[in-house]
Figure: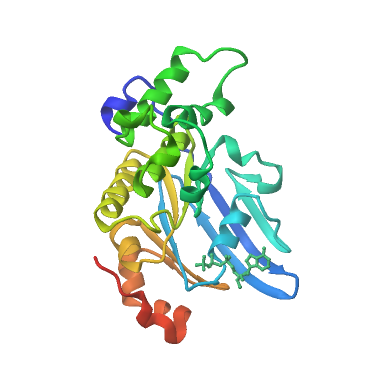
Length: 261
Ligand SMILES: Nc1ncnc2c1ncn2[C@@H]1O[C@H](COP(=O)(O)OP(=O)(O)OP(=O)(O)O)[C@@H](O)[C@H]1O
């Protein structure tokens, strides 16, 4: 968000309560253990990059964090409240892995989809000037004001992901959670997309990014968590590249993690 987009809004006090707190959580799909004794906090203002090999439990951990799945043991808190009692839709913007295909089925325009993000915040009845301003600001922040009347299903992959982010911004979400958001997006648009995330994070938005590309997280994230059923690493990018956590978590597959950054 640029200064232009925020100047009409009050500055929010940054809370010291973790946005997400995962405390000794384990989870299995039937007999298949997927998350084992994981503890991790996401502090307000963090940009956490969650990495791990295919099938290592990243999406499952995200679902547990968002309260969409219930841990077998341990506890997840969102903004200090048990995730199971929390309406995540109000404060968490979620950009799913399959946003691109989901958008294909949506016969809605960009502005309509972004407007939907505003419904949880809207008072009963009509949209207020504040609502309209929040929607316009969100479209501006992700630089899609020229696309507002286009059908979401007709946009490129990168443009669509921006629309989903704008929806979260319109909702004034405190956490933006993205699950491999640039699968199928060309290299140039990917870089612009991660620059956008970095700008949003600079303006105070807390970000959780699941990402395959280690180069992306070491470039843009302020904190990296490396998962393979259990947590192999949680700390800053400098420490991450200096440890053998990556090799330990990825085992013999680490050579597939080449990247273009
Ligand atoms: N609904 C489900 N029922 C049963 N098993 C599942 C289910 N969802 C995921 N799994 C299994 O749980 C494990 C972890 O899956 P998950 O999708 O969380 O991993 P991931 O790290 O996000 O993978 P990827 O990087 O490939 O998207 C995998 O072995 C997967 O096959």
